[in-house]
Length: 249
Image 1 (cartoon, rainbow, N blue to C red):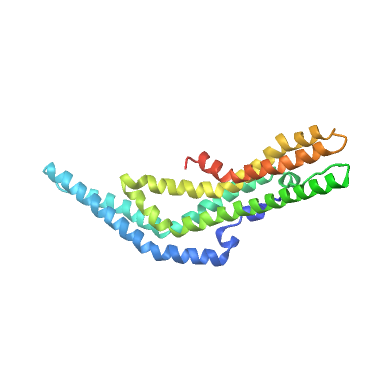
Image 2 (image 1 turned 135 degrees about the vertical axis):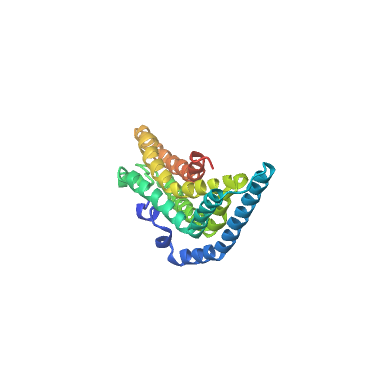
């Protein structure tokens, strides 16, 4: 199991250019709907202000028209560049991941089954098979976690123009905020993977191996190494949930 820093910090266009093009096309297709939503929200707000001013015996002033119109002009621009906002947010998180990765020794990003000097060909064969299976599953799980991370980011980017438009409606603003937090959390899974690898390797794994190292027949080392892989698998699976909990999603 090896964390590839380059893979974790790929932009959406570099990870899969064809997928990114398809997602961009979807975002472009739904963008007009986002514009319509912003227009409707603008109409609703103007009607609300008109009713309020009318109840006071006043009317909308030119200054109010300009202020509200400028606010919604910015909203149109945000919807127009919603997909780019997602890309920028991912790039920002990637910078953070690269900073974290600089303090991660390469050997701490790997899981290798350590068998030790096991006596008896049967025991040795059995533990070798189990250890290989754990190492294989660990590699597959890590690949799946990274794949699902990018899958979430592509899906979020495709519907970004719709969800960004909701920011202009007070009662729906939380949808846009949660959307942006979800994008950040999905991107930050890469950072959680690296930090988890560093902390887990330094705090738990080496201690387990060292404690078991005194076992004369090597069974303790083999058990500890298998336990290391199994626990690490569960930790990797929980990285996505941890990233979302940290950002309150």
